[in-house]
Length: 105
Image (tube, rainbow, N blue to C red; front, side, top):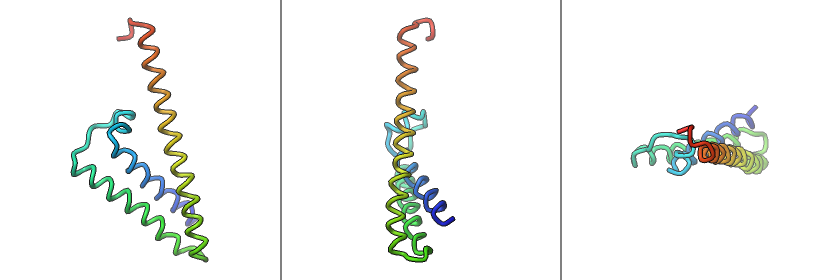
């Protein structure tokens, strides 16, 4: 149970750090953020990752918990990377189809 909470915290933290980047916001058609909002997203993202690390102290053996945290971080980052790759490929496919058929403007 605690591993699922750590995974969700890590996933949310990585997602917030991901959408701070203008390139990734553009990929998902999100609005631009002010510098203050970007700073808040970064701080909250790192805080969520820190909370996930702190959650490892609730495990029976904290040393093993830290190892589990690194593993969970790996899988959370892989999921975010896969989501970005799929979204980028989807975006490229839409652009190619629009170039082929000029009536879709």
